[in-house]
Amino acid sequence: MIVRARPGLGPCSHDGECRVGGCGNECVPGAMVDPGGSCEGRAGWDNVYCGCVETKCVWFTTTR
Image 1 (cartoon, one colour):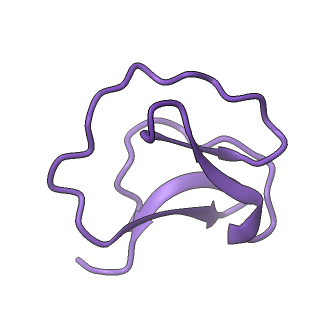
Image 2 (image 1 turned 60 degrees about the vertical axis):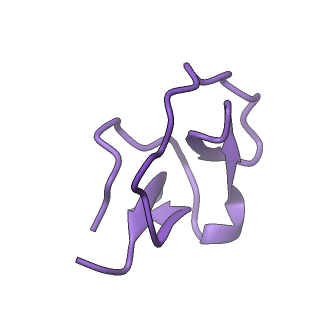
């Protein structure tokens, strides 16, 4: 399940190509210049990962 409402950024082909950027709240391709997030928190986001889903870097979880 994707937990981030924003559209993902890409392209990517595997999780290792995505990294956490901004203030720790952005999931972006590793080659992208850090977009400098707005620093809102991720409170309550347990078991959430930054990775490649359908060729886009997004926050996702393996639980429902």
